[in-house]
Image (cartoon, rainbow, N blue to C red):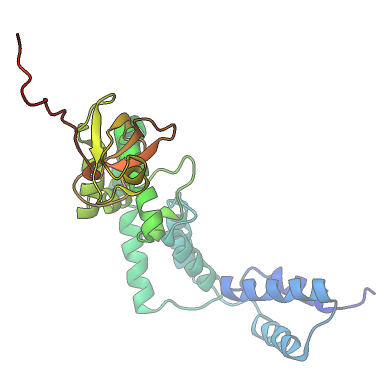
Length: 272
């Protein structure tokens, strides 16, 4: 007969389908510790016994409720969403034979309404609109990069990877607020200064370009506009690439740090 160890005991425990997700995760951590160390401390051993006692007998499950929440989970495509995580937790709780609280029941109803036939049809319509629109994709990506820098809307930006398609709610959240309006206006507005034109750099917000242009006394040439998305939620935030006259290095400058360069006529000069 094989020797019974904490490894086999925990494996037997994890084979039971009625363990809640939280306790399953805890049991997996105990097993990982045992596999690494080869022994179980007194405190951890106590928890193994406690879990074994708790899950000795398979509980009576509310099959109707289990069918309902399992079907709801099948309608949630984004496995990384809060809704999917919540319903997974509920399924684990139902499998463990535990009743839902009134608050949980209300939340299940709210999640269900978000994935009704009408809601899913609207989601499909928005997905089609978004995937067909380069403008919408650009606007969303610009605001994702902006909020990654500021730290806001992390619940959205942290999930954005290649191929990610936002919901309408997510899209509106980060592209339709007052800060987004200023960032996107800066990006989409016509450039005030044309490529190839000469301008001067102001001392305010001019940074290295101001010093490279001899403290703003030498003109700079506009090399490109919209070289990257604006970083400041303010007027004049479009970003240009400029080349100071007589300098081999280009610099990035916001539009608000530039002003027109006018050549003054010499006194006394007249047309013949």
